[in-house]
Amino acid sequence: MQKKLSWRVVFSAVLILLVGLSAQAWTAQTIQPIVYTIKVSAPETHYAEVEVIVPAEGSEIIEMMMPVWSPGFYRVQDYASKVEDLSASTPDGSTLQVDRPKNNRWRIQTSGTPIVVLSYRLFCNSVSVTTNWIGDDLAVLNGPATFITLVEQIRRPHEVRIELPEVWEQVMTSLNSAPDGLPNHFRADDYDILVDSPIVAGNLIVNEFEVDGSKHYMVDAGDIGQWDSQRAAQDLEKIVQENRRFWGFLPYDKYVFLNVFRRGGGGLEHKNSTLLTASSARSSTPSLSWLMFVSHEYFHAFNVKRLRPVELGPFDYENPPRTSGLWISEGLTTYYGDLLVIRSGLCSPQDFLSRLSSNIERLQNTPGRLVQTLEQSSLDVWTSGMSGIGGDNATTVSYYVKGAVVGFLLDAKIQSLTGGMKSLDDVMRLAYQRYSGERGFTQVQFNETAEEVAGVDLKEWFRIAVSSSEELDYAEALDWFGLRFAESDVKEQAGTWKLEILEEATESQKNRLQQWLGSDGNK
Image (cartoon, rainbow, N blue to C red; front, side, top):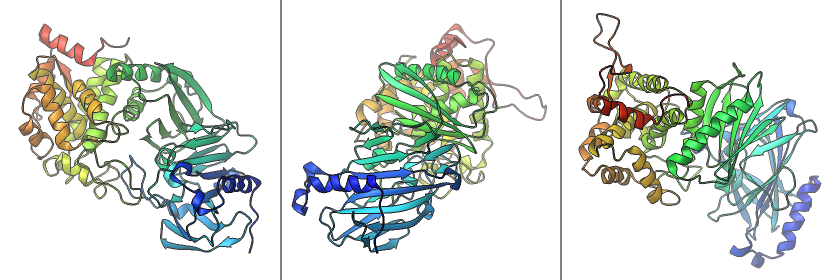
């Protein structure tokens, strides 16, 4: 049986064949890319047609794989269930045998062909930050849920061509353009980069700004309504500028905010982009909660995508990792995501303290805080909740919430120990300098970095805050910044978890508070 292939597939296969006609021609210096063509011809059906040029490189059998999880979203997902009508053939259309040894794997008998053409359809009917959606006016494609790749150890380039309906205008992604410069043709140096770069296509609103020579794109798509895209971009520019001041640099040349209004709500970090989803825009201007939400995802470009626990890379897309460090990667990101919004001048001290108070209140009203440690909350993420959220309050604690509160207390602790000369900011920067990139850090290394900055042994402090389920002590932090918990309006209650500034705060406390928040309010 022979299968009719598109001219693009045949042309790509011929180009690869010309590079080397024998198995001996394939060397480490001439690693050929896997090339995907994704065609959206009838978006109302929710389907994409995918054709893949796969170099067989002399192998009699090749095995293809689809991930079972997405980095940053700690939950196993069955992406392979959306793959339909998968088949394989030679470039001239001769059918090849395909077996399925596992749910997310396909084994192909090559019959000696140096190029295998893989074809499949993707059913894209789910709007989320890890799944795929295709509708009348919009496509959202997430890498792990889209791209089937070779099971191999080498670092191989991957290319993607997107064919859109005629009435759709553009594609936005953090992927680099392919060397040929053709529209909607992208290239990733390896599979990690490919699946870490979500793709949004349709009729998009794009606002561009530049910070420190790096280009940023604010992309709005879907049910935008009266949403003020330009205002949102201006606010995000301030947040990026504050991150530049915080870290001292920007670690990328291009960053893309992909903001999709369609269904649900969520956000997921990527190395050079973030994907945000929400229901239709309810207001014309960004809310404070939205800004802090996006600020959280953007801070991840530094914390977790580059500065990461050693277990979180390189990724095994079939075997989810376990780490005790998500309180650092997510909890401290929550803390700084909020803190850098006020330092950007986008909210008042009262706004920030209200947000921090909410996290403290959530923690103190969670019985599971006295059962599960912060370390265990991270280690148990795959079994005790949906990616760190939604666990049983009676037995679990969120590393987002407690991690943010511990970040606040650790920040105050370091400032107090050093007389305000050092802070958690210095810990993050030093950790980045030492452990970002390929290395990664262990829990012990992060703790030791904090001890070095503080100048004292913090082992007992970390034992209580991170490795035990004992109650946290807020007294030192409140005294340092001149804060208190407000009294309750209800006589039967001793107090609340609402932070407020002491009326009788000393000048020293006021100065510490202002230095911490970095703002007198809205700039």
